[in-house]
Length: 138
Image (cartoon, rainbow, N blue to C red; front, side, top):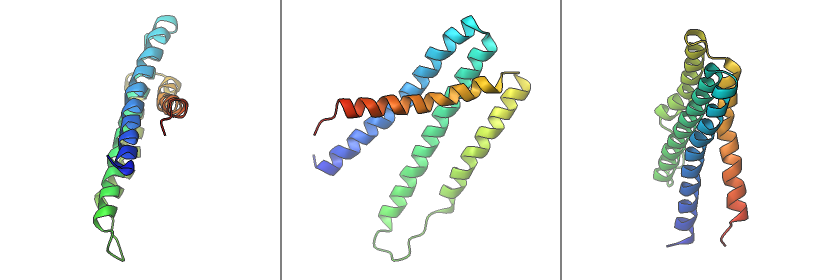
């Protein structure tokens, strides 16, 4: 395997770890919070983590499509990016905002608990980054 292929494999493994760890941290935080605070807070953390996971996956898909489009047009002087990629990037934020509003409004889940759940993605990214640095293989 080439070094570029090996690097891509490492990135894909890190992306998979981040996605799984985001959900795991959300569940791990939601259970004690639901038991100690309230089920609405636990549900909010779980929903926030699930939304963070969706956001991460959509971002990953968008960047993969952008990379594929850029690679396919490598020889063109004026490369064009498909409009669908821009639409997907913008719709990510719109869908997240709509989902948070509906959940907050109709399920009466505290908004702060969903924001805390959204932080699971940051925590997972930090943990995987530290793990990659500590266990670095050159």
